[in-house]
Length: 130
Image 1 (spheres, one colour):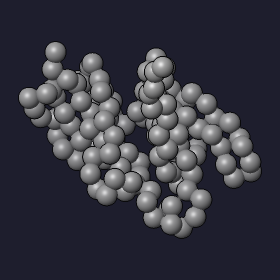
Image 2: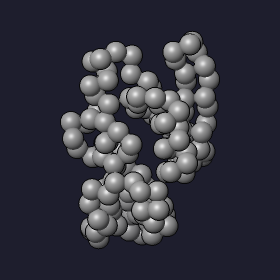
Image 3: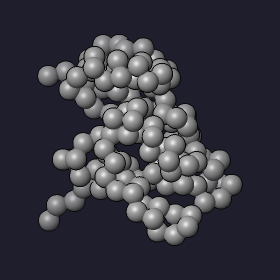
Image 4: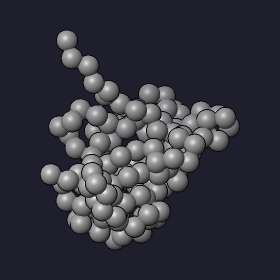
């Protein structure tokens, strides 16, 4: 028996603006966009199609959920985007005017920069050392 995390919900304000950011700016794949009701959609995006992991872009239902958009981790780095081509992916962030919180640095584990998504969630872009 194997187990893995398949999806993680990420609160968003609007499905289409979130899809635009993740697909057109971060170059993620749109895995699924299914209408469930007039107000709900099942939207999955993933940086690759092989890992089996995807973010579920979940539109906030009420004011309480809305208050957590962009701060699901209390201000800490929330998500970690691993890459095998840091230079290319970092340049993509710059080209798409994505807010850089910390410029690239070399750490013992690899090259890392911190950026924000469209709502302010902090991400690490990491290329691990070989």
